[in-house]
Picture 1 (cartoon, rainbow, N blue to C red):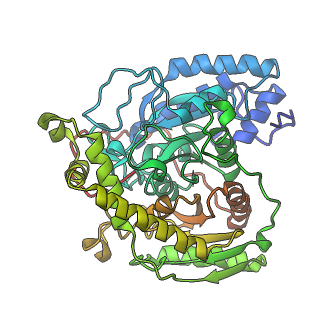
Picture 2 (picture 1 turned 60 degrees about the horizontal axis):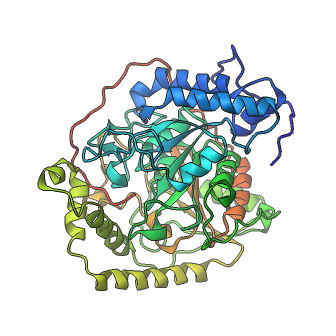
Length: 498
């Protein structure tokens, strides 16, 4: 760890509540220099939550008092120059799919209890042991069961750039909490794009690590398809949080997971990029997405990088994906009575019913299909290649909708988000970062994918891409704007996994 007390470019100090949001590196440099403190930074974010989140609805609960205790403990460590990590004292939100001791585990569902739990998810344990200040729990689609964040428990979570548009999902609350400057970073989860879709829609950086890199809890039929991962306002901040989450020294070690590899000193001009607009099966891309994707490729080529454009001969693996996710919901809700089933949102209830008829033979066939798919992607990518795709086929659509109003979605409701779930099936690390704005001023996302266990190279390349793309990630938020009441109805819609 590097705790040098160099003067930061910008930080949060008493009396300084600038709208320019500092990055984590600036915040901890302020701690180390003694010009800021975790208590001051926490209060800054708590004030922003109170002023802004009534309209956005990104938090299920804000744990202000315990966060203040954690911030005070962190401040004492910084005064003694004994921080626990490079995120000690940094305010972080946690998606309501992880157990946090002392907080309820609602999972976006009316079927869960409001009583606090005492259990602690392994990824949360690593954050706590690193001295992070957990601000609260963020909203999720019910049990992560949709690519937008609308749940029976918390209603609609809205886009940080325009509340009339969707936040994406299922980690919509996490992405909005980061994009709107309500915390420094977020812990989220991704089983079919749930970190990357809302990151794309809200203009933040989100990383789905290699399946199994960060411990997943609770165990399920999904196994390493489901991945805890970080969201942040920059690639460097994302890397900083990832370094803690992937470090077994901050929690119980996982003997099946190789140690994180070190970042490679590889200039972007030396990277061999493979770019695909469809992966061979995506039905469409909106023109605004195509334009931004073309610009990213042109910037790379101007920098001297090799970019090979391909459209591989792949079939849409959504059937494989649904076999696992539906079986998982059947397992989760196996003991739910009829009254409980009636409380589920329509998409989760339908997935549970479909999963109940999936056989062991079908699961084994899906496992073989995953192996074949992973081999095809491995053949397309060498050890130092990066695959580029758009993250979503559209910019954020109406907040109340599960699908955009587009002809392609009338026959395939998943046609707008085809680039996520495939890499959960292959277990490859995938990162989403902003690549521009639509004509309506909404963020558009670029996805970078590497070979398994190559997160360090992926982050290193993404940081250089960030410099090329020059995206201003400050959304046009008006503080203290009119509040939008939460819609607590039971929404019916089309969803397909975490």
